[in-house]
Length: 271
Image 1 (cartoon, rainbow, N blue to C red):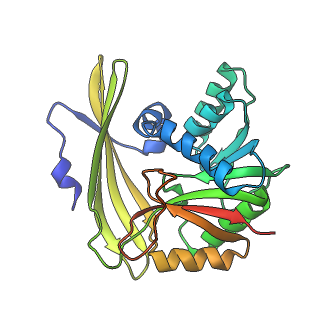
Image 2 (image 1 turned 90 degrees about the horizontal axis):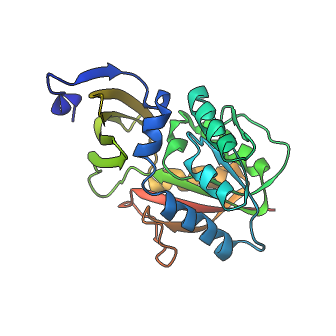
């Protein structure tokens, strides 16, 4: 499917920019599942760890919606992202609430931290921005140094199914006060040989002062269930404790097979 399906009305201005350069809008669009994700993260700590978690780390934290929610619950938090605007937004929000500005700009495949953390999380597919097998493995190994032995890394990945047709479109809406955003995401091209998938994504932003559209393209590395299993094993520092769907239901784990798409891997740091 191509972006022609989503041509803007004549009256709607279109700007072709990165969605990540608009942290205020990004935070609203991806904030709907925040409560469920926090409950899931803390619940995994209860189920799969030998002691209660206190320190949390998020690679590719973006605007820090989950980091902020955990900080408000009294936990120590930190994170990183490549986008300077997102980190500025995240740290400003933390500081407004009296917390340390604990997120920083870095590459999630090449970073170091000064202390270890109990739980790491990357829940909305940001992992797939890593464009090669080697950088994905380096990320898992960096997280292996960041998370203490026995700790967890909760990794959400949209897999490419191998036994059923893949999903091609997704649409959802979000509102906060007088700001409303309608989001559309659609497949533009799949290249299974080179394991590259291209997606169009648009935010239709509606404000009292007017409306406009942000149009962007996401280029992501693809993973089948088998490829993901092989990658985790090759990292040398993680074991799969359990797997769940994006419904975040701790009472309903799933078996990952060729029909799966949205999967959260609960990875446990091996000694």
